[in-house]
Image (tube, rainbow, N blue to C red; front, side, top):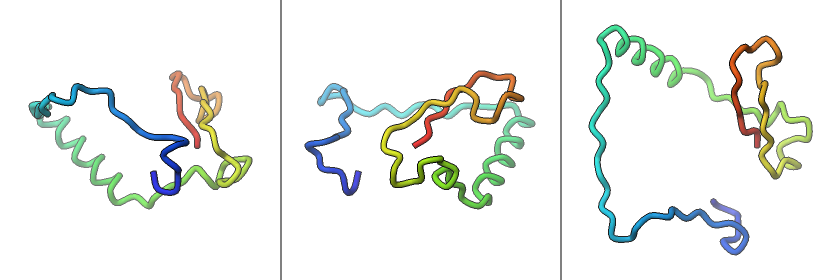
Length: 86
């Protein structure tokens, strides 16, 4: 990441150096599902960008560690989910 000293944090993938990349086969969906997927992708690509940094209680500069939220959408959500908030 730009602006972070590599002595502090560095990304490393633990893979075999001699391993060759393998292309995965494309997934096939039913035609009705494929159309729904295409509509959703188009909707997301045309949507305005969002940022959760403005909603943080500490502000964007004071937040340095991710926090886990088990109910990011309030108690009305019935599904248990984990979200990382920067």
